[in-house]
Length: 212
Image 1 (cartoon, one colour):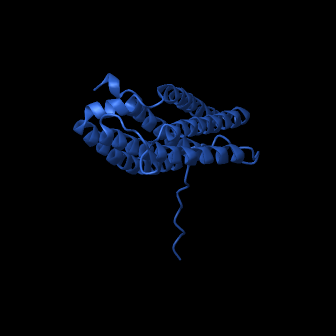
Image 2 (cartoon, helix red, strand yellow):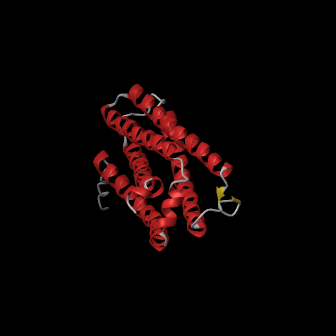
Image 3 (tube, rainbow, N blue to C red):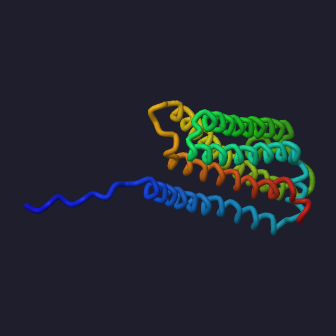
């Protein structure tokens, strides 16, 4: 009777590398998805740069700036949560995760206020678009792409908030070793990806006048 083959244990480094690779592959597919939206934006903007600049002036730049600051801060708290997780600082990790989730919700709330203002101003294509100034077609196209890109981004961020909140609740279990942070590191990559998308969206939406 042949001896039973030795099974190679799935140690922490192996598991970490595999999880990270899977997340990077997923994020690559997301980059391609957003890339199509960015390509559509670029094509439309090249067709009428003056119209896109006029549309950008109708946006609420101060709200976009506040949201940029919120997301950059959330990236910091998420990175600190992952780092302290590897060090085993359970209480601090939970606080940082909840702070990250709260900042994500704050971003969504500010974006909701911005959407409400754009509805009030009649800048919602297909539902309530009353703009009658110059470059009407370009302005309508701009806001169509604006709602599409920021809406998809908000959906991704909402998923991120749910994942981070779940992780914070999971880490409250004292029987779970907080230093095993493979899942947290993957969620961190996802969160930073969503933040990076916004870093590209911010100038495309609010700063068109500066680089036309």
